[in-house]
Length: 514
Image (cartoon, rainbow, N blue to C red; front, side, top):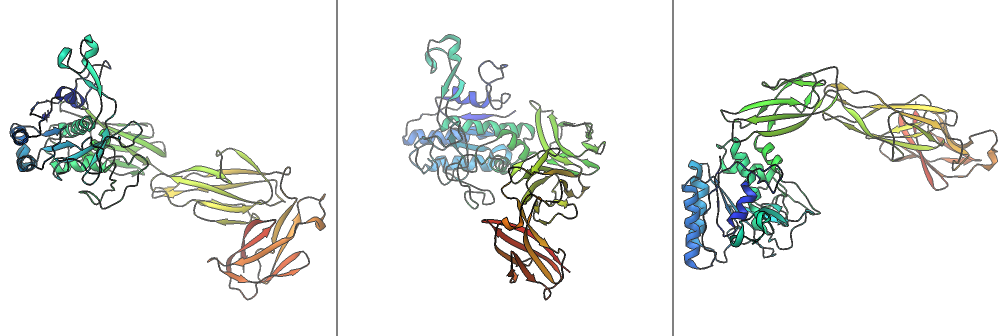
């Protein structure tokens, strides 16, 4: 059970954001509904005496067991008593583990967060709207740590004249407010969830979990080297990003074990304290079975694909559920595309006899670059998960296969089924490079695709260049009638590439010189 301090006259609404009790969908539920709350209210007047009592309130909180101290208030003057109290809390709170001190960044819409939120010992919270854009009132800038929703926040309200909504009966149980004041307690609730599993984590461990798991939302540029954690990317509008409750829990209690399982793998929870029990489950028990108590898993039925591990941690105030995605077995091929158009593995695609290209994306277990199997007689060039080829006019259909591999082995073949299209093609001719392989002469010529087309109608080859594997031109061709001829007898043996331009279109083909 966690305790929390909230120093403001709005403590009723703020406490609801943190810990309103579950009510089966009626009204609201707090981020951490099973925690213990304490309210320490001091005057909001900005005089020396009230500033002193704010420091007294922070000291009283950690001295009386508050693990998390939420502060939805600011001051215009840097007050030593407040700074000392914050330092006491983070150094001495929770028997030296450090109380987590949270402050809202302020509602001044300025590029300088308010005091005491700018104290680096605190966790400074800004507000965003439902579109993941900084709320127009939220202060930002150096020292901002994370953001949370702060617009149209529904929370608990006191009934009658003591609340925001007066004389509304049961409706008066709830109210809708906005401000960084209501973003901050959401982060306090996330910290409480973390400490409810393991109250022995240090302040820095809790802070790291919250900040490292923050989501990089909005159309903002996040850069390294800013804020208190230079290993994380940061933005002056968003800090380290939007807080994620599940992300922070997964960061605080990572699931240890392999990301890729070829046959068996064992999993455990890091930072799990004594007295907690865990129950494991697999999203595909017929493909990957995991022992519910030991966390030892086994690949079944030669299954390959993604699996989500779910672990339920029990023994605290309330069960907590964490997940992790892993890959089982060999990789898959995804994102199959012909000329940048998506296709299915079993789909037949009609293509004109000319140059085309294929693309794929290997997925699963750090899959390597795809390998390709191409029928004999199909000119082609293989790149990084892509392949250019010329559909031969002499063939009616071809099948090009591709597969990927990881440390578990090679995955299944994925096939491109390609058939020759003889209608509505932009040309009745195709570029022919022959002989290929060659050792002396290479001919480049336009050839008709059917007997009904006269060779005299062939388009003119505008240019043809022969390149080595480094992309450097290595031979000058000369024209002889409608052909361009290259003397390759002086070139080294190996793979070369011919680039031919016809009617403004570049056609590429791989050439083997023997």
